[in-house]
Amino acid sequence: MKPFQLTYIAPEAVLLREALSGWGISKRTLASVKYGGGRILVNGKEVTVRHVLEKDDAVTVIFPNEERGAGLIAEDGPLHIVYEDEALLIIDKPPVQNTIPSREHPSGSLANIVAKYFENQGIPATLHIATRLDRDTSGLVCIAKNRHIHHMLSVQQQGKKMKRRYQALVHGLLEKPEFVITEPIGRKSTSIIEREVRPDGQFAETQVRVLHNFCGYSHVQLQLNTGRTHQIRVHLAHIGHPLLGDDLYGGKRELITRQALHCDKLELLHPTTGKRLNFTSPLNEDMALLL
Image 1 (tube, one colour):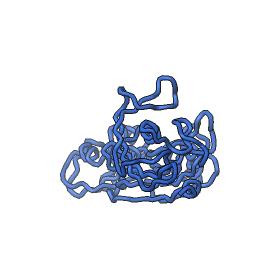
Image 2 (image 1 turned 180 degrees about the vertical axis):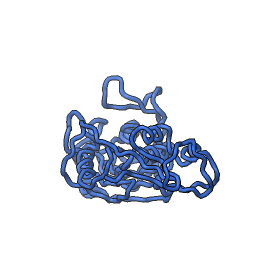
Image 3 (image 1 turned 90 degrees about the vertical axis):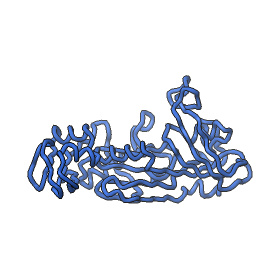
Image 4 (image 1 turned 180 degrees about the horizontal axis):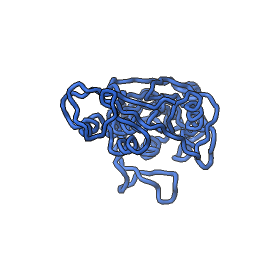
């Protein structure tokens, strides 16, 4: 299996270690290259990070192959691939499928199926899921094919350069056409699963736009400005408009048997080229029928 590698061109004379840091290679990644079987080449010759680069030198970082953890079982299954290249895999996840295995659902997750896909394609990587979705939530999921790419995506998320948009159906009619929910979210003291708005929670912000009010429920568009666990579900329940089907947070299952939440748009900068990528996903059939 061919290892993942990236090539950079030195813009000026500089110490290699400093250049690598400027290109986003973290100390942890550098250590994995150094001690895990990777290599660093300058103009085709292996060097150490103490090497002094000249302007226009070609620096190739060969990352070590990764091994999948023994706990993740590779399984055959359908995958709706929206986009793929040597660094990224964008998947459109159906509802009622875990992103990663859990104690209640140890198999059949997106991670299980992607592991088998990587195995079949000869991709030497473990699973690096950059944007997880809850089991019942459908839509776009971003997966990195390398530990370094995952790190680069995490930096983007922290810098708010990656954007995720959702569509949802909520109970009740919302009066304001657009508003922002800014409420801290933390784990509920009586549960290991539930979250709630609480003063000692982490800062969380959700932008809400009403697309249409129906009889008894509303179609809304949501933009996450932070990425807390269950953020959309908790924020909407907090303002008295829980998601249809979300019985954990007060939603009813009369019209739909899962939480009516779908990640319909994903924007990010490609971690190696810097090019802005935009992906969209149509609503799943169960939500579309309610519209």
